[in-house]
Length: 160
Image 1: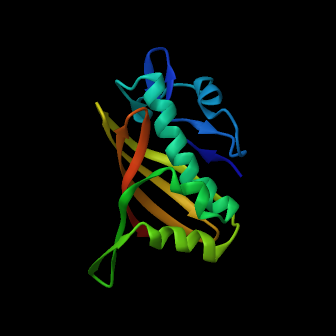
Image 2 (image 1 turned 135 degrees about the vertical axis):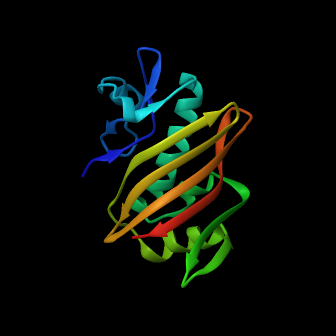
């Protein structure tokens, strides 16, 4: 199953494109080979920032594939949250709820495609369409650069 990763640098413009979902793959290099499209642009992102954002998103998805929250923990900031609406009511939980999901569910196929990307200096907003096992989601992430690392500070999702 293919998974799609974050924007990749091509001719000075960041683009969103497909990448093999193999654990440990060099997604940035593979994505650089993909064609640029107008609807898939993420501008003004340095290669270093792109690599950091890709790393955080890949850890998020690989945690589901591995069925192990330890894989995702370094992608999230301490105090990160996960939120959604349930029966019209806002639910906000500490990120531990996501870690519990990974550990309870166990290994499962997971994939994603980046739908939107916006980066402004040390902050980023990423929206992905994801599949975890049989469940489909629209996920939105707020990331903040912490030193050299990008950390997810908030995950907001809508089950489809």
